[in-house]
Image (tube, rainbow, N blue to C red; front, side, top):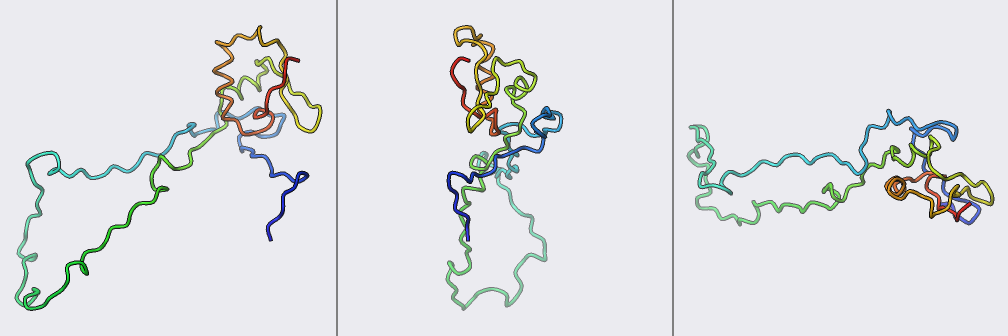
Length: 167
C-alpha cells in the first residue's frame, strides 16, 4: 500500500554523491558528466544510391542461384504474408527525449562553497533560505548574473532555495 504524503512528511531531498556532508566542499574532480550532455547516436549506414547514380549490388555466387524445385512455381502465396511490418521507434529511443545528466559542478556551487557570493544562509523558520548581504543596487550584475543563472540547475538545499530581500 503506497504511503500517503501529508504536510509533515516530505520526500527526501536529492543529494549527489559528490556533495558529501554539509561541511564538505563538492568534489568537482569526481564529476565526469557534462551538464545537458548525452551519448551520441550510433552512425547509420548511408545508402550510396540515394545521393548518386551508382547502385550497390550483391555479387552472386553459384551457391546463391535457385536450384531445381526450389521456386514457387504453381503455388500461390500472398506477398503480405512474407513481408514483415517494421515497428515504429518509440519516443524514448531518440536522444532528444532522453533524460540528461545534471552533475553538481555549477559555478554557483563553487562560488557559494568558497564564500565569494554576497549571500548567507538564514536558518530562521522552517526552511533554510538565502539572505542577501548587500543591497541590490550595489551588486555587480555583469559578474554575478551568469553565476546565478548557472545556479538554476541546482537541486539541493540551500543552493536551490529562493532568495530573500536585502538583509
